[in-house]
Image (cartoon, rainbow, N blue to C red; front, side, top):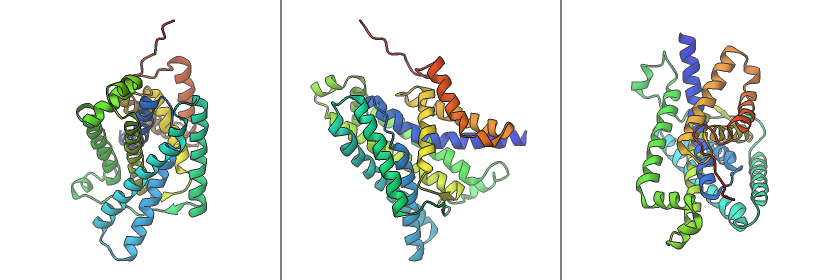
Length: 300
C-alpha cells in the first residue's frame, strides 16, 4: 500500500506540472486554433531565469525567502515577456496565413530558443537550488511525500482556481471566451482581439514558467532540452483531455501523470517516455476530440 501511495503522489506531481504547461496549450488553441510548439521552451526559460537570479542573489547574501520570492517573480515576468514576444514575432504576422505557415513558425521558434539557451548556457545538466521552502506544516507529512511534492500539487490547484475565476468572472476573461467562440463577432462588438490573444500568450507563459521553477526545485537539475519532452507530454495531455478545454487539460494531465507513474513503477522505467506517445496514437484513433472535447460538426 505504501508503494502504491508513493506512485500515486508521484503521478499527481507529474500531472500537476503537465497541467501548468497544458493550460497554456489549450488556452492558445481555444483562441487562435493553433498549437504554440514553442511553449515548452518558455517552461525551460523560466527555470533558467530563476537559476540565474537565485545565483546572483545568493552571491550578495540575500536570505532564502527573499531569494525564493524574487527569483520566482522575475522568472514569471521574464517568461511572460517571452510569450508576448513570441506571439508578436511568430504568430501575429501570420494571423491570416495558412495554418501550416504558423505551425512551421512555431517549430522554428522552438528550435531557436533551444539553441539560444544552449549557446548562452551549456549542454550539460546544471544543479538547481531548492527554491521551495520546507514549510513546517508539510514536514510532518514527510513520511508520505516530499514537501516539494505537496507544494507543487497545492500551487497547481491554486493556479487552476484563480485561472477559472479569471476566465469566468473578469472582463478580460469574458473577452477571451467571446474571442474563442467567434473571433469575427467579438471584433464587431468592440473587443480588441489582438490584445486578448497577447494576454492569452502571457498568461499561458506564466503558468508554464511556474511549472519550470517548481519542477527544477523538485528534481534539483535543469538543462536546455528539458522543455521539449515536457512540452510534448503536456501537448499529449491537452489532446487527451480535449484540446481547447481547460478542465480537459487538467484531467488529461493527471491521467497521463498517473499512467506514467504506475507503468514505470510496476512495469519498467526504461519506457517512461513511450507511454505519452502511445496515448497520443490511441487518442487520435479512437477519440480525436479527447475525454472532455466536443466534436465539431460542419454544415454542408
